[in-house]
Image (cartoon, rainbow, N blue to C red):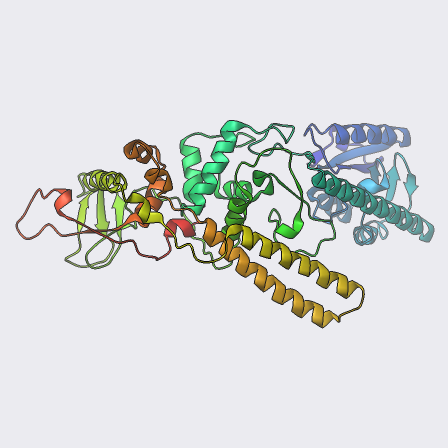
Length: 497
């Protein structure tokens, strides 16, 4: 955040100086670190007789990562334009921890004779070979300290994870600020999200439901698709502790952990079972899983109800010629149907409740018992990960060539992917389960979110709206509906990101 100084308008004879301040982490968000740096830099400017014309501030920004620092870039542009003759910083490591950045800085200040003054390290004259040598040495020392600190932090976090301890940071959803004590209400929301997602409810719909019920996130913001996804991916939901070393070669995205990165068991009870968590992760990271942009569905039957022509029907509000909310076939031309949304939705509700209240309702979700059990699949997974480690050890000891290691690793990862698919299939949850196990099906259905209702409809039946017929009016919805067996086609709600 650049600030022009009130003393910028001098008599033209003073030495103009800019101040640059930076702190890597401002956990409190109060900017106290940069404020103290600025105060000491101003005292230095006053002692040296410089006029401060601007202050450049990169708060909560690291110089070690190499990511762009907005105000640092603005300062370089100002120096290139000849707006100042001095740069003031608390220490040289506030300016640079990268030799690449230092060399770029030298290219700006050396030809212009700009001197760098620091509170702690004194003046750095980059116009002379000696000054540049000192600056490069200081930068190398700062780089070493950053790398060494990063290594210590990584080892400490791994040790904490192996011991099942909380590593600190922002309060994770579902837990108190200590990162260990489970918050019952939030834990129930996590379990509900996982069940809904495995039941075929899209992330858009889950986020929309959380917003509709005014469920807050940990920082009080509204739920988004990305927020739901991040929460569902966390190993801690299954009471598992994960760690990815700083020098890891893992190709998994940030926040996605595999069994090979699970290093410990947490001291709290799982919110969802490890098998359920693995199924959620496998489904979320499936490369064949497509995503569709746009808002969550707002109608029970939109995209589910069908016209006899095979076209899907969409809901529309009462506008123009529509005197009431209506479902209408999306195909063009004559002969396609429409129906009052309220009438058909009410009738479909009655049919669902009646069907799932029957004694044989459980047969709707029965699965064949053939194939390995979850315990057997997890055992296979553990063996495959052990083999991966053995491949890495063999390569390290030069017992196999690099080409052999690559080929064997690819083959083993393909086997892991196949087992993970089997685990996902074995733990896939039918959206009908809560309804079939309910004492009062109507009450459970009415308590479902819209996304959960849509997923249940897709799993239970196909719904086709028949035309009214020539010369007929006021035909009840019950006389215009044909129900059929569910089709295995993927749900658009499931594909939603």
